[in-house]
Image (cartoon, rainbow, N blue to C red):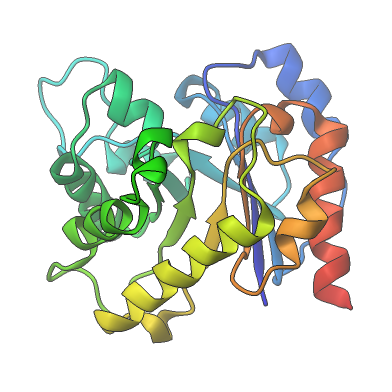
Length: 250
């Protein structure tokens, strides 16, 4: 199994933070365990200029417009200029605070694919949806709205990130068994629409840290993590990455 260990810095960072952080990330490229950093857009060039090729760069957002009078937006072509390989789409914070719908997320996903940027599609349920048994229906709807379109084919590269909203930034984490159950369901849904052969990584996000990473990564269908708060601590982030590497090398 291959792993992706992605750090979503959200609206945190500074030039001083980046210099200190990246100076401690000295390791060789590992094709089976990829490290990804997603800083705020204004620091993408700073990260790009100070990281080795072993570390992939990602954006936290992308506009579905090509160019034009869209104040504050960043286009796919701009991200290409900054050597961005990945972009997060559909994060629950974007859905909640910026009113992004499944249809909006689909447009962003499509523009990323069109411009050879790998989208990380975030899906996940609220606590109320989990308690009322809506988890699987909700996640299936999130997936199908985005993935059943003409741009998605066997050559398209993308990631699925399962992030139960009730576990993001709360300190609460889905048990490895609960998380893996949803990952299995996502894999089955991909199979239903003919995308099971794409070697699509399904990663987990939701208060991941070095204490729970081993149990999560040992699950059959969890292929890494999208890490928020813990990724801001470089030593913690390295520990999580090393756990994935140790499992991969067993």
